[in-house]
Amino acid sequence: MQNQRRSVLKKMLAAAAGFTGISAVAKAAGATLPATTENGNVVYDQEVPLFSSFKVHGNTVYIAGIGAHFDGDIKAHTDHVLKEMEAQLKKAGSSMDKVLKVSVFLHDLNDYKAMNEVYRGRFGSNPPVRTTVAVYGGVPGDSLVEMDCIASL
Image 1 (cartoon, one colour):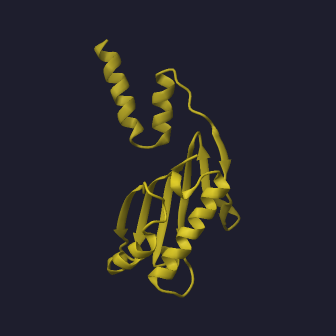
Image 2 (tube, rainbow, N blue to C red):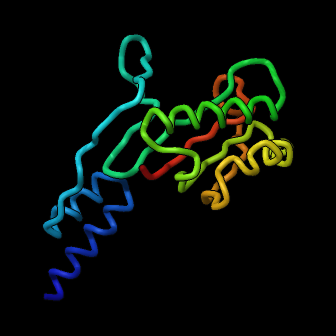
């Protein structure tokens, strides 16, 4: 019995490494996870698939990082990113009100206050949890902000 508990604990710790571990724990426990049901647009790099714009797995939607790749200030970039996020969520069958977690990556931490001015209120009356960091070296593609999120269906 004690060895069995240790085995389950080891599998649970492996789950922290990613969804493959979670699948292993679920299988070990006799549970099944729903298969991935939908991919968003696939982004290619030299004709090789690089990433999807979103993934739906079970009742959860994962939106890839969205940046703003045009001239403008942090408010314009934040507004663009949030509108694109909303569009991706709708394509996936979700909405801004169903977002559970947002990660915000800023080119410059001094833009935090201005980004918040645009961000505020975009997720309804029960906003998601959020992580905000300034990225050493800047956000890829010269965007002043990049965001990704996780939402329910």
